[in-house]
Image 1 (cartoon, rainbow, N blue to C red):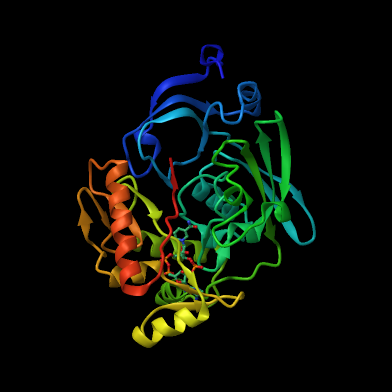
Image 2 (cartoon, rainbow, N blue to C red):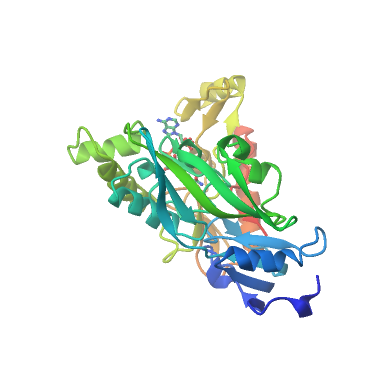
Length: 348
Ligand code: NAP
């Protein structure tokens, strides 16, 4: 890459402190706010694997900045949302990758298209949603996914990924499995969702059922479920604008059935959820709490007092502080339960 020839819209030495919800200090050597495919096409001319590191940034809500980044940050700000099709079973709704996820979900509900309500208030952008297959309260983005368009920086052309091509798993997709997202080869530009006309409510999770019961709602519609989700999340999760954080910091671990049985013998209250594949999902927040980290700080960072799964920046933290706390929590959970916690955010 010849930096001197880069297009005008590429900035140098950009400050990323306000572009990550943990509020960590870092600069990017090169930074571009992307609002069109044409900009990506212009940058593709400079793309050479191994020559320059590209990083695709959405809302910065699932990101730990370890320090300055010597590559090019592509900040996805592509906007737009529209109904692009309809059949007897579904509405097909497309949004630009840079659209705020929560705003998009609320907009679909306002149009009378249910299906994404359980995913209200998840931070981040539409383009990031399929990458880690965001999910909450028994619903995953992949369940409502139809297709996405990504720009292939290597070949300089747009490509379409259907549901099978995305290989969705629990908080997982082909974009994580192959590391494509990190090396910047495929940049998601828009996502289309398939929202069901024969909608069924998903209210099985205890927190949501409790919230609806408290409001004496028996047969909740999609709007009421969204409101319940919003109320529950607001009561447990800190607003990044007030307390910088990245949402859940660790994945909920899935262990072998035999391991879960041994743990249950020692800890009968252990929340556990058998999976279709025979594994058993454990609640990472409970393990962290029991390991003594709920509401506890290490330097300027800590595990949030109302939800131990959330790592918060109390002010002035650096990437090194986050790493130190992450490792301390992992070590203590491993020592107490023999369970490995893996972090959810991307580290840059
Ligand atoms: P929670 O509801 O206290 O649940 C903790 C754990 O128990 C999770 O592993 C959850 O599975 C599981 N669980 C609870 N009730 C269940 C049920 N009825 N059936 C199966 N599994 C059940 O979790 P929370 O921390 O307050 O978060 C609320 C929801 O938001 C959860 O679904 C969580 O996964 C989701 N969330 C998602 C993201 C993300 O997409 N990046 C970030 C933050 C929170 P699941 O994880 O499969 O739901």
